[in-house]
Length: 248
Image 1 (tube, rainbow, N blue to C red):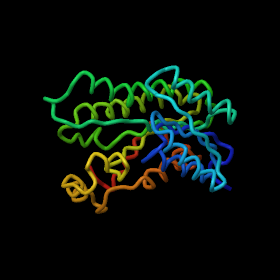
Image 2 (cartoon, rainbow, N blue to C red):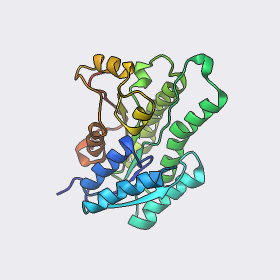
Image 3 (cartoon, rainbow, N blue to C red):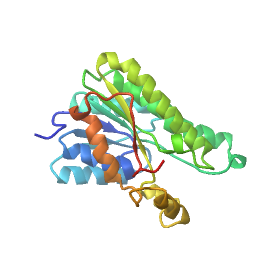
């Protein structure tokens, strides 16, 4: 039997990259999936089409997680369409790198609003509907501990995600809802391609720092998300699973 048969999952930022990979993997294991997007409806529709073509269940739902009403709307869509929510993947995230001299108020608030406030608002909305056995998976990053230069704001957001993961694990544990994070290393996504990371000296350096000798792919994170969403990880909560090929 599929590991997630009968479960309902919401994946924020699911129109591309890691989010899309996770959405497809959860659906392949039997979950009905809400693929959230903020701007790329076409991308989310493509993910939904791929899932439904493989006989899975999915819908695309727009919404900015950093706005309370829209975060609530994403969760409402899951409840209205599929009857509830069992799995929440807080994947929505943005980043802008640069030295301390280039940090601006706008850049700070934009990243913290999506990466941190968005996680809180979506979790707040979802937790009202989650029952015993629910799983919340926060997508953090290896930068929360690796702390590379020129990433003060972004690394700060992911440090916050790690701390919040621990707090929510304690808060929601009595209700038998688990909260864990996945902390990826460098992953080949549309975003890293557009940022010029793939094929750059930085990619070469990252590979040199990775014992497994390559950067990651979305599927490397998706399989871990399936594990955390399923009963296979039923005794894990408050954990940060570093998925970086050994990069530290």
